Length: 83
Image (cartoon, rainbow, N blue to C red; front, top):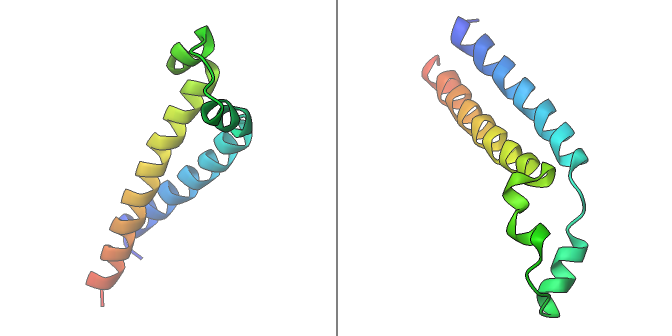
């Protein structure tokens, strides 16, 4: 086993655990969907969502998803080049 394989495996494992935890901490989107269909008005919450806890959790989810996919692709490419 190479060092690259070990590091990529650790990164994929950590990113997957963090994504699971962050997604479980997020609130459901059912209220947002119904208000968008019924034409809900802009509220203070919707305008400043990026600065709230929910907005930060969404950004963390996006970042760790990107890290997960890049590490998984690199891990897959690394495995095929060793053959």
